[in-house]
Length: 532
Image (cartoon, rainbow, N blue to C red; front, side, top):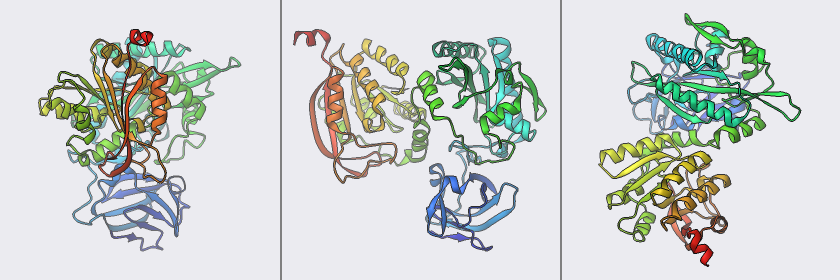
C-alpha cells in the first residue's frame, strides 16, 4: 500500500483503510478517481477519531475496486481542489477503474449503493429517463386516478438548480392516497401495480406501498422509477400525521401537497406538490437549499417503526446483502458444504428440498439437484435469486429460484401455502444467525405449514454461542445464536427437535468457525399430536 498525502499542508492521507482527514472543518468533501466522481463524504458524520485526525473508511461497495493506482482528487462542494495525488492501493498493480461490466462509471449514492449518477449519464439517456418519468406520472394521474407528483431528488434539483442533481441516480414519484387504514392502502397499491402492468410497464414490488418501474433505456441499463405511497393517519388525539414511503413522517399540511402544481425540469413539465418548498423542507430539513451531495436522511424512529409494521415487514439488511453478493459472490465456495453431505444421507431418494437462504451461489441446493432431488431455492436478496437462477439454467438443473422475505408474513404465508400442497423438506445453512426474533418465528410458521402435511424434516446449521468465540462472517450480517433458544422456539411452535449436535465448521467465506450447531426437527401432524 502506498499512502498519498497532500502537498498543501498534509490535510489528507489516502490508504487502504480509507481517507484520513486531519482538518474536518470542511463539511462536505467530493472524491474523484482519475477525474470521475465516485463518493461524497462528511468526515464528522461518516468517520471516527483516529491518530492525527478523522478516519473515514471506504464504503464496502468500493473496496473491490481499490486495487491499483489512480489520481485521487478531493474537493469541496464549490469545486476548490483540496487534495490531488497519484495513489497506489492494494497491490498497486494496474489502474483503479470504478466501472460496471459495460465500462460505465459508477459512484456511491446517498443510501450507500453503487450506481450510475446523472452526472455520468449522456444527455440523450437523461431525456429518455425524464420522458419515461413523465409517462409514469401521466398513467398514475389519468389512468389509475391518483394524485401523483415528482418528489425527492428530482424535485429538489428542479426547485434548487433547475436541473437534475449531478450525484442523483434515479427519479422518485409519490401519490397521495385517500385511505387512512394500512390494509386499504396496501390494497390500493396492488391495484395500481395491476393497472400499470396492464399499461405495459415492468414492475418490481418492494413493499406494501412501494413499487419500482424498471425503465429500460437505450444504453442497456434499467433505471428505477420509484412509486411511493403517501397518506395521513390520525394520531391518538385525532390529529393527522403525514407518512410518505422513503421513511418520511411528521406534520405536513395537506394543502402543501394538493392540488398539485407544475414545475419544469430540463425543459419537461412535471406535476409537483402544491407547495414544493414546504415539501422539500419536510424531507430535507430547513437547510434544503444548501447543496450537500453526501446528505443522509435522519428518519424519525417512531415513524419508521410504524411504516415497517404497516407496509413493509422488516428488510433493513436487504441492501447490505445485495452488496455482499455483488461484491463477494465470486469468492464464495461452489462445492457443497459438509452439512449438505450430512443432510443428503438422511433424505429419501425422491425427496423435494427447499434451500432457504441459498445465497448467490446456491451451492447446496445445486448439490441436491445434481443428485436427483427437485429443489426450490429461496433467498432474501433479489441479486442472489437471480444469480442462482442463472447458474441453474446454465447447468440445466431441476431447481426453481424465488425470493422469500421471512420478515414479512405475506411472503412467508405465500410460500407456506404452496408447500402445504407440495411437501418439501426444509434446509437452511447459515440462516438462523441472519434472522431477528420475529423472522425466526416466521420460519417456524413456514416449517409448520410445509412439514406437517407430508412429514418432512427441517435441517439447520448455524453458528452457536459460546465464550471467546470469533463472530461468523460477514460481520454485522450474521450472528451466533444459542442452540437452546432455537430448540425452545421450535418446541413452542409445535415442533420436535430430533437431533442436535455441536461441531466445528466454516462460515460463509469458508473461514474456520468453531462451535457450529446442526439440528434436525419435525412437525408432527395434528392427529399424531392428539394421539400422544
